[in-house]
Image: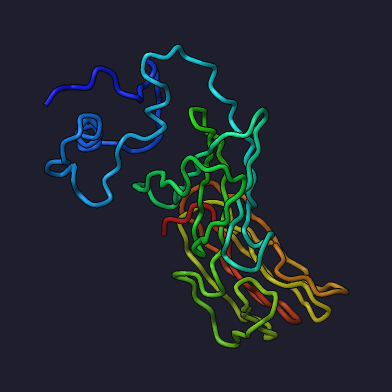
Length: 271
């Protein structure tokens, strides 16, 4: 077996990638250049090999100016754009249209790397089927260019993991609500508690003519939300609490009237 005189793909000095690679990645990538089958652990299903983030210059070519990073847009909170857990990512770039690579990463996992959704695509938008309760980072780059990144928090449903409701709450089907459901109570003192590991918290719910008042306590700091509105609003971001990443304690208490909740948006929740 002889080495090719020049690979069709190369990497300029100083190339940096945020994708997680290991020595089996390098073994498999070298095998891809020379042609033999993958050996040992380099042949494991799902193994990642060097992609366009590493091979970003034609071999022997004079380095050309890299394409500018595109502008990328996605909702910061998925429920503000849709009642379903789907996220539409859009991007644009100056100059002639080229091809793009789109990737996603779960920010709630310490081990998850970037996963490619589209490569060498001429599309300028993508709808991603997200998982409730997760935070997804998206990045897009013109082929050979640098990445632009944005993040979307996808709220949980009415029953987030490890959350506990007291008595007197009722789950109802609600057209137009986040994931089509709400959990509601009119009983003074009815409560919900949640201990979570993550960042900022957004409460998703409803404001109605019957809307009452809800006491929200985060890490011992209380705030009252007034949920009355002359017109129905759903799904609605009732409040957002900016918190640093760590362990937090949330408690909700019905003070009066109707309280209808639809979900909890927690940034990069890990537990």
